[in-house]
Amino acid sequence: MATADSPEPEGLPLDKFQLSPDDSDQARRANAIIENIRDDLDNLPEALLDLLTEVIKPLFIGGHSRVTPAGRKPAYAPPPTLPHFSPISIHEEPRWRLPLTFPLLQWIIHAYRSLPQPQRRQVLEAQFPLLIPPILNLIDDIPSSSRAEGFSLLRLLCHTITSANSDILKRTGLVDVCFDAIKSNFTLLPTLTPEDESLQVLQQLYPAALALAILRHGLLASLAHLGVGSSSISHVQLITFLLSQLIPIVEAMGLSAVAHLNRIIPILRNILLDPFALSVPELLPTALDAMGTIIKTCSPRIRDRWWSECLYGLVGCWCNILDDEAVSGAQPLPALIPTRDKARAVVRILHDTVDAEDWQKAVSTLCHEEKDVEGLFVPR
Image (cartoon, rainbow, N blue to C red; front, side, top):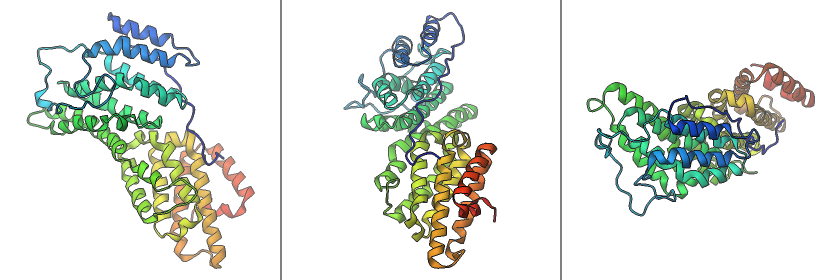
């Protein structure tokens, strides 16, 4: 069983992709840099910096008007460009409109996730000023395909920032700049914009806006501020409400929510383990609903990394229920029957997610150590 405060994995495997071969100097240089990344990733930060300075930055000469060279919001930022009035001339062909621009930026942002902490945060924050101007320029570009790529990269950057436990977007004031760039694109609708182009942009815009809103308004930060995940829980009515809001947010984010599991799972686990949570009628059912939603929505990552933490919380919740029933002398305690049933239902969801052999081994060990938990694994 994982410990109560299991850290995020050291880093994700790095896929050394190669850009499609063409005759451009940029593609050849990028491929050479990526090819020279060592298997131990010791030179990955240097390679990412070379890609950004030698390949990406020359494509976006001039940076962006709403970002300083240091990667901060300027004292005076011009208003965001409306989609239908972009300053880029239709007769111009910006240097960044190359086949390599989007896949290379996408790979770079993904690559930070291969670094361990705290190096991940340090490298990402140091190179952040080189990342944000290209993304904003793509969002301001005229073709709908460029805008869609910009939104996709912004969403990925938000998730990578979250995985690094960084507040760089908020600290630099660029959350508002990014949100302003997004807002103007909600008007990309017929008849000014063809339906197929509108759909192409909006399908990437809404997930990006959601990821940005989570960083900006901080549902998880609110839960942490209220002490959720610590040794005791207070403000339970407010916490119950915030947990209820977590459910539709995770459902809307889909697999993108995996970037937040290292914060969400400990919060839910500690609520389920808290024996005093049973005294609040809606807290445990809401936490169980949230746990079930997380498991279903993020099942690949839950199976690979987090399932034992989920099981730990569910078993602790079940044991607390049994303890309450033992004290009251009623078994089952009528008021706790819905919570019992919900805990069993979430366990079934987790069972369907986990490798059968791993699951059977864990359940056998638990039932051998504590016979009373057998009821958790038996459908009602």
